[in-house]
Length: 197
Image 1 (tube, one colour):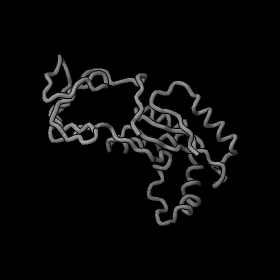
Image 2 (cartoon, one colour):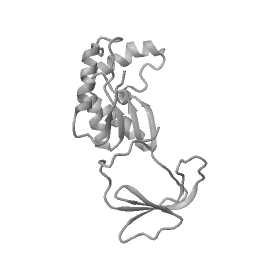
Image 3 (cartoon, helix red, strand yellow):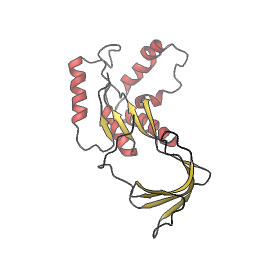
Image 4 (cartoon, rainbow, N blue to C red):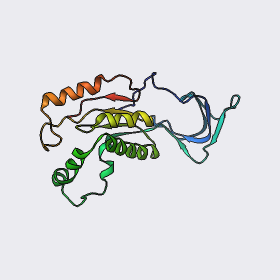
């Protein structure tokens, strides 16, 4: 799976030169190559052994560091970051039924947003720039706002749950209507809606 590219995504304005890093493009058989990377308005404009910076450009010495594309995390739980460390001694279904699902059902817009932001900051700190998340049954829009605010590309949708926990389950028709409504919301740049059964 490759990250989606969307020309509507706003880019960081200006020019940046990453000087002397070990560039790893992630192509098959790729070997790190010491090079400079020129980024203009958020897009890679050149990768060469040595680049003379044009005009007033921010130069960052990245010698001794790898320069590689952002990582992709295809299994996140944005709505669960605030629950870390709770009931770790339970088997999966007991953990879900007794702890996680009741906690998810207790989310409001603010707590869902804060949970997502915490998870996304951790992702960005580890080099992850694109995620896939099955959302929450409710408050998925808060998760989307966090992705948009932090500039993380996301494949995201509300969790379609029609059984398992009364505080989260909806009828199939209601769950699909919520997914359609989420997908139809205009103005998103970083979030691409998906179905999440």
